[in-house]
Image (cartoon, rainbow, N blue to C red; front, side, top):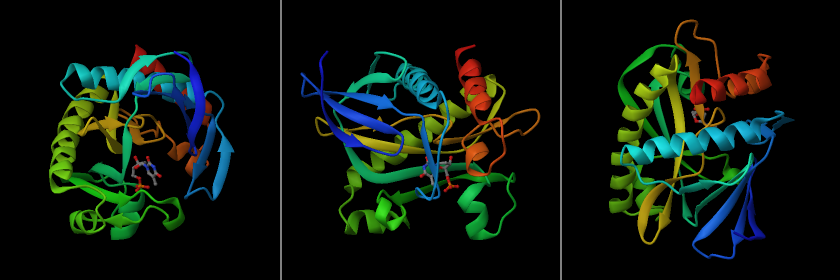
Length: 234
Ligand code: TMP
């Protein structure tokens, strides 16, 4: 598989064309940002962890019947994926109160949420990924009703699968963000699943095992990324 021109560079990944127009190569970086790029840094080894963890998560989800963009792990930092067109909607799932949800609604972080919450954000860095609802998605034509229905169904299934999966690894799945893409007219899971995109707390101690260690200057950032990968692979 030949790595050709870079077609996109985001905050944490680069995406390259290949000699097959149905396939892209994703290259994971160690760059870390928070608060919409205001805080910048490097988490040494993060790209490797996020690449390998995403691969493991996508393979696990495929086995449970979720279609994803993942095809093959190519190297420590690179994966071969289906060439999807990312829908500009970030899908956030919340099982436990944390982060912007705690702040916005004045709720205490760590409180279990009785009914799983689904949020959508418009994927637009200039606007700071504003929160939107179904009506905005239809009006702005970010996705069709059919596509959003599929996204919701898949997302709830993914949450059920991932909650059980992480529990077996001694991890509480607090919240996470998903992105979906179009491939041959079908909506499939894309982007990454990593400590950058999930809040993961140790089941026994509630220790934060995710990017909040970087966002909030909690220390042991690199070590924590390695620890999560070790648990996923163990
Ligand atoms: P939030 O509480 O800051 O809204 O974040 C909710 C979840 O989404 C959390 O698991 C982290 C993830 N997330 C991303 O993956 N990318 C982002 O840009 C943001 C703000 C959050």
